[in-house]
Length: 95
Image 1: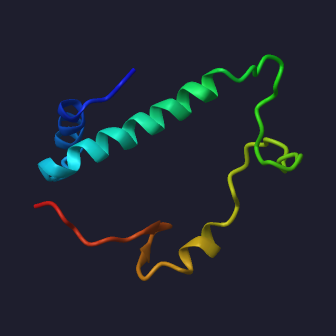
Image 2: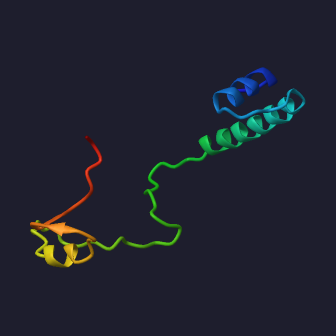
Image 3: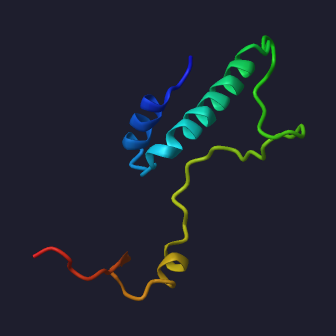
């Protein structure tokens, strides 16, 4: 796929980026460079390659998935500027 100046202008307009007419050929060339790199990536054989979280092998920390009530209502509400009847109190914003 090749991008010409007209297509580059359309992409710039869709992205709401103002590009002067004399800069459109350079922008089209940059788009073509990016597309060429993507085509190179598509040629790589990734059959059997596991997805990675990081470039270094690591395992994400996990915790047991247990449903609890939290039991921390007093701690949480102690940070609130205004708490009433066990809830955060906020100013009325709708009339």
